[in-house]
Image (cartoon, rainbow, N blue to C red; front, side, top):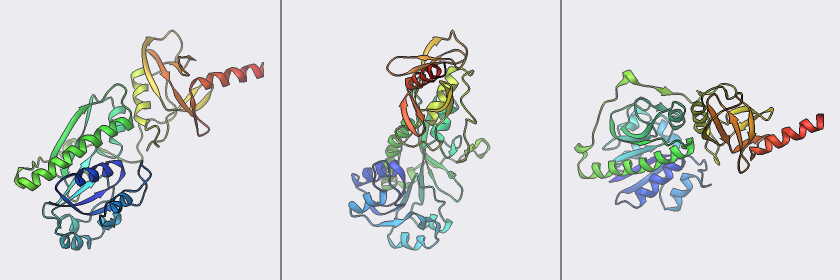
Length: 310
């Protein structure tokens, strides 16, 4: 099986490494020079393995079909590459293009789907491998895998679950195409239930509202949380210790409140506890002036300012 990989981010690196261990031949890698979380770009990693690398933008060019045909490409695997592929290029590989999407289709099409699943209170999430057509996250579904969203899952940890499951599905696809292409499922997507999440959309507008139930507040913070990596949504802001700060770590205590919403008190191990509508939540890390500090330092600073003003 002759495979071209069009990919980006950590998921692209993991699929490339899995293909390297498989019997399939990677004939080229389409990838940007942007660094991954490991500090090296996918293109750099591919070149270090002796693989030809092509600029990621080539997917926009109809001439890519000539290169794919010249390389006798059986399939192109698209992994977290955000470029829209030219229709002419889609027709060039023997078995077409297949996309790995970090969400269940068609319910969670678009971007930042792991974060949206957490923010929306979903009990499960999943990944989808689908045949690509001219639409975005469209085309018949080949494989999907579902898994539970844990009470402590963050945007980062759920994304990692998607990557692990996605690598398995991509290998399953290549094995099926190699053994019997007709065995690959092709379930049409139901366009009537499509939900497409755009890059600029966010579930939070303004500071966190501590008067909401703790489950809602916790989900919002965890949805934004990609620590220690940068979050695509930025940092959720809140009023704590008399100032606006970014909230980076949260946990539920399941202890009922006996104070007004937003009241903060010292917690254990450098944390603070904040009263929500129904229970205390524990905040471990906050960002202040672009610095990440223990949450308890907010109360220390607040006490110091009050004493200075006395």
